Amino acid sequence: MYSLRKKGTAQTKEFRELEKRRRSIPSVVVNDPHFIRIKYQRYADDWIIGICGPRTLAEKVKEELKNFLKDSLKLTLSEEKTCITHARREEAQFLGTLISVGGGSGSEKIALTKNGSGHLIKRRSTGKEILLRIPMKKVIQKLHAKGFCSAEGDPLAKNGWTLLDADQIVALYSSINRGLQNYYRFADNFQQLSRIQYILQFSMVRTLAKKYQVSVKHIFRKFGKNVTIIVKGQNGKKDRLVSFYLNHDWTKQREGFRTNEMRIDLIQWGTRMRTRSKLGKACCVCNTTTQVEMHHLRHIRKTGGKKPIGFNEILQALNRKQVPVCKTCHQKIHRGDYDNMRLKDLAYNPYASDERK
Image (cartoon, rainbow, N blue to C red; front, side, top):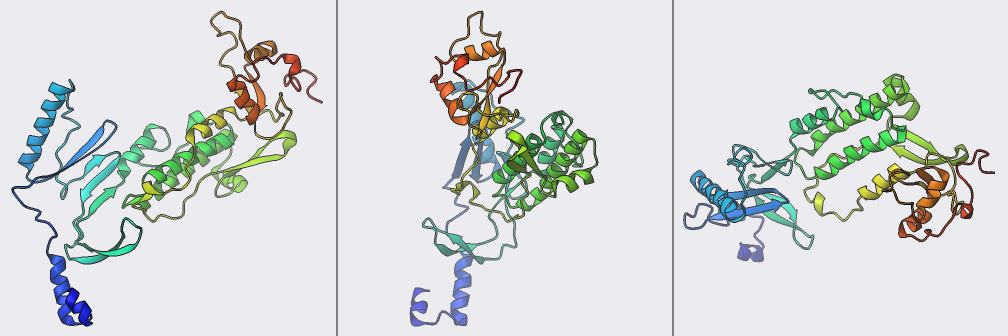
């Protein structure tokens, strides 16, 4: 092949026939009886073993694994969850993903892929690659179990969330939608998640409609197709916008887990969602009106019979479980920088009967 390319005859019929024959020859001996190929992958307590060989070999490996867990680790192998699956005819489940070997036409073809340096190269593809699919029925079953839809996948209002603020409802639905899409971005049937997005979008709208006792059409007219909630801060001014995440790009990304895109800090997001001030007041320590949150004490009287110490003394004096503070002061409170502060040291009393001037 190299000599033909060097002679400049790469476009001839002879070269094309040789290239076709070369692609039809496996690069390894796949049925070598003297060489066993076994791959093992584990994540937390979920694991999978791939074996290139007969079913009797898989059964032998399973039995040896069962004995090892019992004798060495004092663990019991779950016979119900540990299945032997034929990769060509069945699908194995690992980390919420269905795995099988694609059948294809079996005809050899050239595929473009990236090497370790990120450059596009040509490689042989026989149409027998690993297929990774989303178990759509199980995803819908989980949504049904949590009250987002019926067993058939029809969107339903989530009754327990009608007591939340509208922006919290939208943020929760958006996080579920984005989380599922980020997780399954690599899947071959990623496009089918558009149905899950539809279920979550209309479940959210029905929840908002039930909250305000209006129709679904009224919610779309009021908040738009993306359902954008305007959250107001002090003096009724716009503080921020909260919109439902609607994806429009349904192309799969096999390397989705390896991207360096900025991810959402779920811990910080959850904390801010619980602590964001709904009073529309300034920080009671420094009097700033930006990034105001709520500092919480679980319960004033649940202190084990001991007198509250630190900043919690102020909460006891106010007879309150929470006070509005800015993000900077909130961090200082938790670091103990304000432990010597007294009620008179506050910029204002957020719960004074005459309100702050």
